[in-house]
Image (cartoon, rainbow, N blue to C red):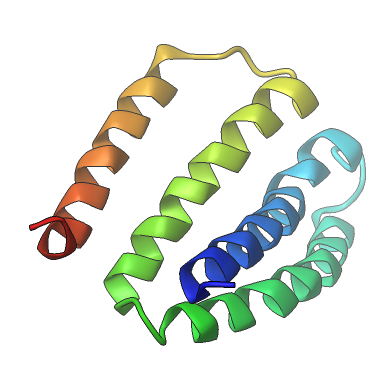
Length: 116
């Protein structure tokens, strides 16, 4: 399998764990002290790092750090929007579309040397 595909797949898994670590406590533990949420989030984040570190190592064999970061940001928004709408029951906002369009521009500028 190509390093880019492996890296993106691992980053996708990493971002699912990251999103839960960062935001699930807002719904599930909002009546608990923040320190409990912090320790639980750290436990979840361990699994995030188990995917993120190999994703970046594999990706770095063929991509720059900037390219890896932009890919990660696109994946983050792609995971966060469905999470916030379906899990946290937040309204879907047009601002997500505008943020996505800005990320498309960021992807273009980070990868434009590969497009030419």
